[in-house]
Length: 301
Ligand code: NAD
Image: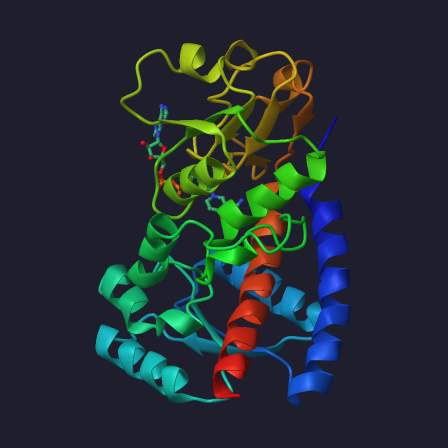
């Protein structure tokens, strides 16, 4: 079965729109998100546009800040400091990649952790690894799959948990293989799956016999950026296959890491590219903005 992130994302955004209109009643204003783009990388421009459109749909106030490619790191730090201090800004996102003369790590650290809607700040990344959910107040839902951590979780792994929740499959005890060990996808995702009681393997560029490792997986997630790396040989019959990879092909089309046509014959659930993980990532950015807003409002009271 094809697991359409696009359809699930639309449902979540509609529910979020209703939630936000009731938050406006409660707190007197809508959550707000500042999006900074430095330079005019065409892919970044598309991503930023999608984020602003999603925010508008949900009823989140967005502030778009487009800076020239010549912006220095110091100037960017200053902009971030002003947004950190702005009481009416709940979330700050700096679209990556930045031009080479700006150090991404320092820029991410400049954002207040409580406004870091991407969940990339070391405080948020560390909180995910150190905290188990203290109290499971409720079962995780598709809408809010990881609400119990009290910190911001990176959008893509969070969106993948929503996709997994949408399958209705109980994750407890399942074998999960995450291919890719980046700080923004592979590693946080592995921790989230561990907390969902999966037995987790992280495969990477030095993994020997990748197909054999993948073949064991009840849940196979590819986050590499190599078109069609995951062939049918890697997929166990009845597995859930989630494709995070996005690569632009010479003919202009997008390709995932999974050979979709071949693997869909074997998988119980499989995400397409485009229309799989991508729309969920943007939706979880909206969710993170709302969560940052609520935490800030509750702190003020
Ligand atoms: P990255 O480049 O930081 O990391 C890639 C990982 O793949 C590394 O950990 C590396 O060890 C591993 N790898 C490389 N070659 C491999 C091989 N032959 N076998 C096994 N593992 C191998 O990647 P990232 O930032 O996590 O992004 C991965 C892909 O996901 C990219 O295509 C990116 O565009 C896409 N992405 C999509 C979304 C979305 O919302 N859909 C979000 C983030 C990233």
